[in-house]
Length: 333
Ligand code: AHR
Image (tube, rainbow, N blue to C red; front, side):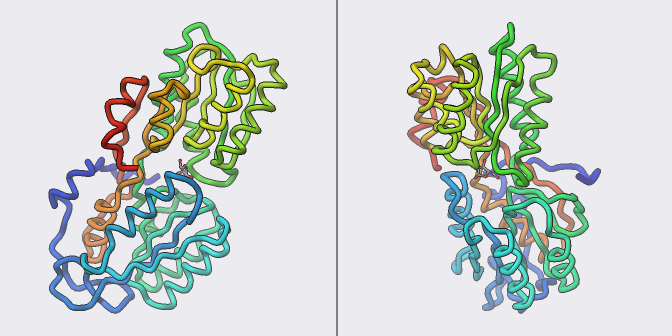
Protein backbone atom coordinates (compact mmCIF):
# COMPACT_ATOMS: atom_id res chain seq x y z
CA UNK A 1 0.00 0.00 0.00
CA UNK A 2 1.49 3.34 -1.01
CA UNK A 3 1.98 6.04 1.54
CA UNK A 4 -0.86 8.01 -0.06
CA UNK A 5 -3.61 8.88 2.34
CA UNK A 6 -6.69 6.67 2.27
CA UNK A 7 -9.95 8.48 1.90
CA UNK A 8 -13.03 7.11 3.59
CA UNK A 9 -16.09 7.57 1.43
CA UNK A 10 -19.54 7.58 3.02
CA UNK A 11 -21.76 5.81 0.46
CA UNK A 12 -24.22 8.71 0.68
CA UNK A 13 -21.46 11.17 -0.11
CA UNK A 14 -21.26 10.02 -3.72
CA UNK A 15 -25.01 10.37 -4.13
CA UNK A 16 -24.71 13.93 -2.85
CA UNK A 17 -22.35 14.50 -5.73
CA UNK A 18 -19.47 15.36 -3.39
CA UNK A 19 -17.12 13.34 -5.57
CA UNK A 20 -18.86 13.86 -8.88
CA UNK A 21 -16.61 15.74 -11.24
CA UNK A 22 -17.83 17.64 -14.30
CA UNK A 23 -17.00 15.38 -17.24
CA UNK A 24 -14.11 16.40 -19.46
CA UNK A 25 -13.00 14.70 -22.68
CA UNK A 26 -12.05 11.14 -21.80
CA UNK A 27 -8.32 10.48 -21.58
CA UNK A 28 -8.87 6.71 -21.81
CA UNK A 29 -7.76 4.49 -24.69
CA UNK A 30 -11.32 4.04 -25.80
CA UNK A 31 -13.60 5.94 -28.08
CA UNK A 32 -13.50 8.96 -25.83
CA UNK A 33 -17.14 8.58 -24.93
CA UNK A 34 -18.11 10.19 -21.69
CA UNK A 35 -20.58 8.83 -19.19
CA UNK A 36 -22.95 10.76 -17.04
CA UNK A 37 -23.99 14.23 -18.14
CA UNK A 38 -20.89 14.80 -20.23
CA UNK A 39 -23.10 16.00 -23.02
CA UNK A 40 -21.58 13.60 -25.57
CA UNK A 41 -23.87 11.06 -27.26
CA UNK A 42 -21.19 8.42 -27.00
CA UNK A 43 -21.32 6.04 -24.06
CA UNK A 44 -18.30 5.46 -21.83
CA UNK A 45 -17.25 1.87 -22.35
CA UNK A 46 -16.46 0.01 -19.14
CA UNK A 47 -14.90 -3.46 -19.20
CA UNK A 48 -15.86 -5.22 -15.96
CA UNK A 49 -13.56 -8.20 -15.33
CA UNK A 50 -15.70 -9.84 -12.67
CA UNK A 51 -15.62 -12.91 -10.43
CA UNK A 52 -19.08 -14.23 -11.30
CA UNK A 53 -21.14 -16.65 -9.20
CA UNK A 54 -19.44 -17.09 -5.81
CA UNK A 55 -22.08 -16.39 -3.14
CA UNK A 56 -24.51 -13.79 -1.84
CA UNK A 57 -21.90 -11.07 -1.31
CA UNK A 58 -20.53 -11.35 -4.82
CA UNK A 59 -24.00 -11.39 -6.32
CA UNK A 60 -24.92 -8.19 -4.45
CA UNK A 61 -21.67 -6.47 -5.38
CA UNK A 62 -21.72 -7.31 -9.08
CA UNK A 63 -25.43 -6.56 -9.45
CA UNK A 64 -24.87 -3.17 -7.81
CA UNK A 65 -22.13 -2.37 -10.33
CA UNK A 66 -24.37 -3.39 -13.23
CA UNK A 67 -27.28 -1.39 -11.79
CA UNK A 68 -25.06 1.69 -11.54
CA UNK A 69 -23.24 1.70 -14.88
CA UNK A 70 -26.35 1.81 -17.03
CA UNK A 71 -26.87 3.20 -20.51
CA UNK A 72 -29.13 5.87 -18.99
CA UNK A 73 -26.18 6.93 -16.83
CA UNK A 74 -24.02 7.16 -19.98
CA UNK A 75 -22.20 3.81 -19.82
CA UNK A 76 -21.79 0.71 -21.92
CA UNK A 77 -20.86 -1.83 -19.24
CA UNK A 78 -19.34 -5.03 -20.65
CA UNK A 79 -19.71 -7.64 -17.86
CA UNK A 80 -17.18 -10.48 -18.04
CA UNK A 81 -17.56 -12.97 -15.16
CA UNK A 82 -14.79 -15.54 -14.70
CA UNK A 83 -15.40 -19.10 -15.86
CA UNK A 84 -15.54 -21.20 -12.68
CA UNK A 85 -13.45 -18.61 -10.80
CA UNK A 86 -10.58 -19.30 -13.20
CA UNK A 87 -7.99 -16.51 -13.39
CA UNK A 88 -7.02 -17.33 -16.99
CA UNK A 89 -10.54 -16.53 -18.13
CA UNK A 90 -10.24 -13.19 -16.35
CA UNK A 91 -6.88 -12.41 -17.96
CA UNK A 92 -8.35 -13.31 -21.38
CA UNK A 93 -11.30 -10.95 -20.79
CA UNK A 94 -8.94 -8.22 -19.55
CA UNK A 95 -6.79 -8.60 -22.69
CA UNK A 96 -9.86 -8.42 -24.93
CA UNK A 97 -10.95 -5.19 -23.25
CA UNK A 98 -7.50 -3.66 -23.80
CA UNK A 99 -7.48 -4.77 -27.45
CA UNK A 100 -11.01 -3.39 -27.88
CA UNK A 101 -9.90 -0.05 -26.42
CA UNK A 102 -12.51 0.34 -23.69
CA UNK A 103 -12.39 3.61 -21.78
CA UNK A 104 -11.87 2.02 -18.35
CA UNK A 105 -11.50 -1.43 -16.79
CA UNK A 106 -12.97 -2.54 -13.46
CA UNK A 107 -11.23 -5.59 -11.99
CA UNK A 108 -12.36 -7.91 -9.18
CA UNK A 109 -9.50 -10.41 -9.16
CA UNK A 110 -10.08 -14.11 -8.45
CA UNK A 111 -6.35 -14.40 -7.62
CA UNK A 112 -4.15 -11.72 -6.05
CA UNK A 113 -1.00 -12.47 -8.08
CA UNK A 114 -0.34 -12.75 -11.81
CA UNK A 115 -1.72 -9.37 -12.93
CA UNK A 116 1.42 -7.34 -13.67
CA UNK A 117 1.57 -8.04 -17.42
CA UNK A 118 -2.12 -7.29 -17.92
CA UNK A 119 -1.97 -4.09 -15.89
CA UNK A 120 1.13 -2.92 -17.81
CA UNK A 121 -0.66 -3.53 -21.12
CA UNK A 122 -3.61 -1.43 -19.94
CA UNK A 123 -1.19 1.30 -18.81
CA UNK A 124 0.52 1.32 -22.24
CA UNK A 125 -2.92 1.63 -23.82
CA UNK A 126 -3.73 4.48 -21.40
CA UNK A 127 -6.76 2.61 -20.09
CA UNK A 128 -7.29 3.30 -16.37
CA UNK A 129 -7.86 0.22 -14.21
CA UNK A 130 -9.88 0.36 -10.98
CA UNK A 131 -9.70 -2.57 -8.53
CA UNK A 132 -13.02 -3.48 -6.93
CA UNK A 133 -12.93 -5.39 -3.61
CA UNK A 134 -9.85 -7.54 -4.17
CA UNK A 135 -6.29 -6.23 -4.01
CA UNK A 136 -3.32 -7.52 -6.03
CA UNK A 137 0.14 -8.75 -4.96
CA UNK A 138 2.70 -7.28 -5.33
CA UNK A 139 0.69 -4.16 -4.65
CA UNK A 140 2.13 -1.74 -7.21
CA UNK A 141 -0.35 1.09 -7.14
CA UNK A 142 1.33 2.74 -10.11
CA UNK A 143 -0.41 0.09 -12.20
CA UNK A 144 -3.97 0.95 -11.21
CA UNK A 145 -5.96 4.07 -10.34
CA UNK A 146 -7.33 2.91 -7.02
CA UNK A 147 -8.80 0.02 -5.05
CA UNK A 148 -12.36 0.48 -3.80
CA UNK A 149 -13.27 -1.84 -0.91
CA UNK A 150 -14.06 -1.95 2.77
CA UNK A 151 -10.80 -2.27 4.69
CA UNK A 152 -10.36 -6.00 5.32
CA UNK A 153 -7.67 -5.53 7.92
CA UNK A 154 -9.76 -3.06 9.92
CA UNK A 155 -12.93 -5.15 9.57
CA UNK A 156 -11.16 -8.31 10.76
CA UNK A 157 -9.39 -6.35 13.51
CA UNK A 158 -12.80 -5.45 14.92
CA UNK A 159 -13.81 -9.11 14.80
CA UNK A 160 -10.61 -10.01 16.68
CA UNK A 161 -11.21 -7.31 19.29
CA UNK A 162 -14.78 -8.59 19.81
CA UNK A 163 -13.42 -12.13 20.21
CA UNK A 164 -10.81 -11.05 22.77
CA UNK A 165 -13.45 -9.16 24.77
CA UNK A 166 -15.92 -12.05 24.53
CA UNK A 167 -13.41 -14.62 25.78
CA UNK A 168 -11.46 -12.83 28.55
CA UNK A 169 -10.37 -16.22 29.92
CA UNK A 170 -9.33 -17.54 26.50
CA UNK A 171 -10.48 -20.69 24.75
CA UNK A 172 -9.86 -22.61 21.53
CA UNK A 173 -10.73 -21.12 18.15
CA UNK A 174 -10.59 -22.13 14.51
CA UNK A 175 -10.55 -20.09 11.31
CA UNK A 176 -12.52 -20.98 8.17
CA UNK A 177 -10.66 -19.18 5.39
CA UNK A 178 -11.48 -18.22 1.85
CA UNK A 179 -9.52 -19.89 -0.98
CA UNK A 180 -5.70 -19.80 -0.88
CA UNK A 181 -4.30 -17.09 -3.12
CA UNK A 182 -7.17 -14.64 -2.66
CA UNK A 183 -5.80 -11.36 -1.28
CA UNK A 184 -8.56 -10.72 1.26
CA UNK A 185 -7.78 -14.00 3.08
CA UNK A 186 -4.37 -12.77 4.24
CA UNK A 187 -5.74 -9.32 5.04
CA UNK A 188 -8.46 -10.82 7.23
CA UNK A 189 -6.03 -13.11 9.05
CA UNK A 190 -3.71 -10.17 9.64
CA UNK A 191 -6.52 -7.99 11.01
CA UNK A 192 -8.01 -10.71 13.20
CA UNK A 193 -4.63 -11.48 14.77
CA UNK A 194 -4.07 -7.76 15.37
CA UNK A 195 -7.48 -7.42 16.99
CA UNK A 196 -6.86 -10.39 19.30
CA UNK A 197 -3.93 -8.51 20.80
CA UNK A 198 -2.66 -10.39 23.88
CA UNK A 199 -5.81 -12.50 24.18
CA UNK A 200 -5.26 -16.00 25.53
CA UNK A 201 -7.51 -17.43 22.81
CA UNK A 202 -5.63 -20.26 21.09
CA UNK A 203 -5.88 -21.06 17.39
CA UNK A 204 -6.23 -24.86 17.15
CA UNK A 205 -6.93 -25.08 13.40
CA UNK A 206 -7.34 -23.03 10.23
CA UNK A 207 -8.52 -24.39 6.90
CA UNK A 208 -10.11 -23.10 3.72
CA UNK A 209 -13.77 -23.82 3.13
CA UNK A 210 -13.72 -21.90 -0.17
CA UNK A 211 -16.40 -19.32 0.81
CA UNK A 212 -19.01 -22.13 0.75
CA UNK A 213 -21.65 -23.13 3.34
CA UNK A 214 -21.38 -26.80 2.37
CA UNK A 215 -17.62 -26.84 2.84
CA UNK A 216 -17.89 -24.71 5.97
CA UNK A 217 -20.13 -27.38 7.44
CA UNK A 218 -17.98 -30.35 6.44
CA UNK A 219 -14.69 -28.72 7.47
CA UNK A 220 -16.06 -27.68 10.87
CA UNK A 221 -17.60 -31.12 11.41
CA UNK A 222 -14.12 -32.60 11.01
CA UNK A 223 -12.58 -29.97 13.29
CA UNK A 224 -15.15 -30.73 16.01
CA UNK A 225 -14.57 -34.48 15.76
CA UNK A 226 -10.79 -34.12 15.95
CA UNK A 227 -11.01 -31.81 18.96
CA UNK A 228 -13.75 -33.71 20.74
CA UNK A 229 -15.97 -30.60 20.41
CA UNK A 230 -13.49 -28.53 22.42
CA UNK A 231 -13.76 -25.41 20.22
CA UNK A 232 -15.30 -22.26 21.68
CA UNK A 233 -15.02 -19.87 18.74
CA UNK A 234 -15.19 -19.97 14.94
CA UNK A 235 -13.88 -17.04 12.91
CA UNK A 236 -15.43 -17.60 9.49
CA UNK A 237 -14.02 -15.24 6.88
CA UNK A 238 -17.39 -15.00 5.15
CA UNK A 239 -21.06 -15.56 5.98
CA UNK A 240 -21.63 -18.76 4.03
CA UNK A 241 -18.82 -20.62 5.78
CA UNK A 242 -20.09 -19.40 9.15
CA UNK A 243 -23.63 -20.55 8.38
CA UNK A 244 -22.24 -23.95 7.44
CA UNK A 245 -20.32 -24.11 10.71
CA UNK A 246 -23.53 -23.28 12.58
CA UNK A 247 -25.21 -26.31 10.96
CA UNK A 248 -22.29 -28.52 11.95
CA UNK A 249 -22.41 -27.23 15.54
CA UNK A 250 -26.13 -27.96 15.77
CA UNK A 251 -25.69 -31.48 14.38
CA UNK A 252 -22.94 -32.07 16.93
CA UNK A 253 -25.42 -31.20 19.69
CA UNK A 254 -23.78 -27.84 20.45
CA UNK A 255 -25.72 -24.62 21.10
CA UNK A 256 -24.37 -21.60 19.21
CA UNK A 257 -23.96 -18.73 21.64
CA UNK A 258 -23.46 -21.06 24.60
CA UNK A 259 -21.11 -23.95 23.64
CA UNK A 260 -19.56 -22.20 20.65
CA UNK A 261 -19.68 -18.71 19.17
CA UNK A 262 -19.45 -17.99 15.45
CA UNK A 263 -18.26 -14.70 13.95
CA UNK A 264 -18.49 -13.94 10.23
CA UNK A 265 -17.72 -11.21 7.71
CA UNK A 266 -20.02 -9.90 4.92
CA UNK A 267 -23.37 -8.98 6.50
CA UNK A 268 -25.60 -10.62 3.88
CA UNK A 269 -29.30 -11.09 4.62
CA UNK A 270 -29.06 -14.77 5.54
CA UNK A 271 -26.30 -14.08 8.06
CA UNK A 272 -28.15 -11.15 9.58
CA UNK A 273 -31.25 -13.33 9.94
CA UNK A 274 -29.10 -16.05 11.54
CA UNK A 275 -27.63 -13.48 13.94
CA UNK A 276 -31.15 -12.33 14.82
CA UNK A 277 -32.11 -15.99 15.41
CA UNK A 278 -29.05 -16.75 17.54
CA UNK A 279 -27.40 -19.08 14.99
CA UNK A 280 -24.48 -16.69 14.61
CA UNK A 281 -22.86 -14.57 17.34
CA UNK A 282 -21.28 -11.64 15.48
CA UNK A 283 -21.44 -10.39 11.88
CA UNK A 284 -19.21 -7.68 10.46
CA UNK A 285 -20.48 -6.06 7.30
CA UNK A 286 -18.18 -5.90 4.29
CA UNK A 287 -20.34 -3.48 2.36
CA UNK A 288 -20.64 -4.58 -1.30
CA UNK A 289 -22.79 -1.64 -2.43
CA UNK A 290 -20.20 0.80 -3.75
CA UNK A 291 -21.32 1.22 -7.35
CA UNK A 292 -21.95 4.96 -6.93
CA UNK A 293 -18.46 5.44 -5.53
CA UNK A 294 -17.01 3.43 -8.43
CA UNK A 295 -18.86 5.61 -10.93
CA UNK A 296 -17.54 8.81 -9.32
CA UNK A 297 -14.02 7.39 -9.38
CA UNK A 298 -14.40 6.46 -13.08
CA UNK A 299 -15.49 10.03 -13.84
CA UNK A 300 -12.58 11.48 -11.89
CA UNK A 301 -10.08 9.11 -13.56
CA UNK A 302 -11.36 9.88 -17.07
CA UNK A 303 -11.26 13.59 -16.27
CA UNK A 304 -7.59 13.17 -15.37
CA UNK A 305 -8.16 13.99 -11.71
CA UNK A 306 -5.91 12.49 -9.04
CA UNK A 307 -7.50 9.65 -7.07
CA UNK A 308 -6.15 8.23 -3.82
CA UNK A 309 -4.80 4.70 -4.08
CA UNK A 310 -7.37 3.14 -1.73
CA UNK A 311 -10.96 4.23 -1.23
CA UNK A 312 -12.35 2.64 1.90
CA UNK A 313 -16.04 1.75 1.94
CA UNK A 314 -17.39 2.08 5.51
CA UNK A 315 -18.88 -1.08 7.02
CA UNK A 316 -20.71 -1.72 10.28
CA UNK A 317 -20.35 -4.40 12.99
CA UNK A 318 -23.34 -6.25 14.46
CA UNK A 319 -22.71 -8.00 17.78
CA UNK A 320 -26.17 -9.06 18.93
CA UNK A 321 -29.56 -10.37 17.82
CA UNK A 322 -31.10 -7.00 18.60
CA UNK A 323 -28.56 -5.20 16.42
CA UNK A 324 -29.43 -7.51 13.53
CA UNK A 325 -33.18 -7.18 14.06
CA UNK A 326 -32.84 -3.40 13.94
CA UNK A 327 -31.58 -3.44 10.34
CA UNK A 328 -33.10 -6.61 8.83
CA UNK A 329 -36.23 -4.99 7.41
CA UNK A 330 -34.28 -2.45 5.33
CA UNK A 331 -31.39 -4.73 4.39
CA UNK A 332 -30.42 -4.07 0.75
CA UNK A 333 -28.36 -7.25 0.31
O1 AHR B 1 -13.60 -10.58 -1.57
C1 AHR B 1 -14.75 -10.56 -0.74
C2 AHR B 1 -15.15 -11.94 -0.38
O2 AHR B 1 -15.43 -12.70 -1.56
C3 AHR B 1 -16.42 -12.00 0.47
O3 AHR B 1 -16.19 -11.82 1.83
C4 AHR B 1 -16.90 -13.37 0.12
O4 AHR B 1 -18.21 -13.65 0.53
C5 AHR B 1 -16.72 -13.32 -1.38
O5 AHR B 1 -16.85 -14.52 -1.96
